[in-house]
Amino acid sequence: MRLSPIVIAETVCLISAVALVWKDKYAFWKVVTCYIAIALLTEQYAAYLSSRHQHNLWLFNIFLFFEISTILFGLYHCIKAYINPKPIFAIGGGIICLSYVIFLFKQPFSESNNLTISVMSVVYALYCLYYYYLLLKDENFIEIKNHPEFWWVTGVLFYYFGSTMANIFDGLFNVKIIGYATLRYCIYVLLNYILYSLWIYSFICRMKQRKLQS
Image (cartoon, rainbow, N blue to C red; front, side, top):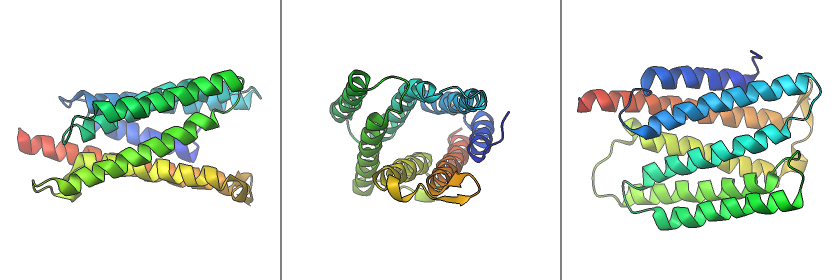
């Protein structure tokens, strides 16, 4: 296994997920665990292809299907506690799928699907903000520091909002700062560490919540 910073973060998060939430009664936590495992395998196989000087962007384009479905499912799970989210998720999911279809018509599958990545990042950020709005409107008392869904959504918001900003200012972040590593790469490493750290904390919160409910 190639121990890049992102692979280390994914490995620690996967181990935490298996240990803390894999046996949870809600499918959401199992889906997230499987997604992290797929992300780790994708990262490893992409590194293998790169080491053999083979194109690997097609692999990430396939992985996008898992990313889109998992994050949409997770946000749906969190928002449905407050409203019926089917209409807004049908719209958001439709927009993301349309962007993927446009990419397939306009570019080869071997190129990076920047269009869909940008569109889904904006959609996810909007869903996260809407979740916060619903949370603030909720009359029931919620202890935020121990609320697993809040921290899971917060990780998603940090990652995808940060990714959106990185894509917008892409030209400014291509400068090399540490050996071969560009500022853009370092930003994405930081975003991954924030995402997986917050997800691990959400797993801990869910484990504690489950023990209190048993």
